[in-house]
Image 1 (cartoon, rainbow, N blue to C red):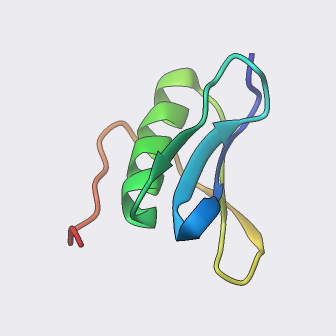
Image 2 (cartoon, rainbow, N blue to C red):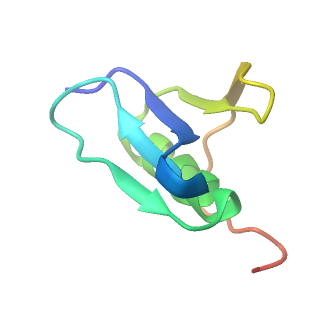
Length: 74
């Protein structure tokens, strides 16, 4: 079982949502905002901490939420 949810940069600039356990498959998104929205809802539903890697490579803990979505879809 995962103990944390992460949003990090994947291949070709895509954003990836992963857990630190083998029970959660990796999901990738073309837009980071979409990945963060999905990860926040996933972290909320599983009761897990969410960590997002910023563009500067620093990991920041984000709040989990049941319903989130970016204001602007690109």
